[in-house]
Length: 114
Image 1 (cartoon, rainbow, N blue to C red):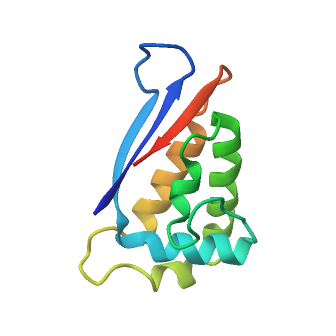
Image 2 (cartoon, rainbow, N blue to C red):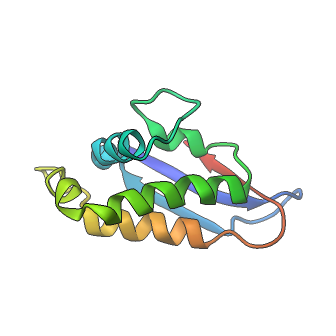
């Protein structure tokens, strides 16, 4: 399984500003990061990235920033959660979260996660 994540401008027929696909195998990292950072999710807490779906660009960036800050504060704890099958890892997942967070422009946007 994997996530499809995109950020779209809030006007019809717009192309995505950023589109990414990443393995669900790192979900345990997200669960730990949201719990340790005290980030509440409005979706199932076992799949915290889904919280991003339908948020505004800035609200999603704030959500991602909290996760990034927590993961950067204790890399060893998250590296221990690297999937045994090698699909996904702390370093590439953190880089993805930073790319997503930094992609938010100054005009209105909305996140999509499937």
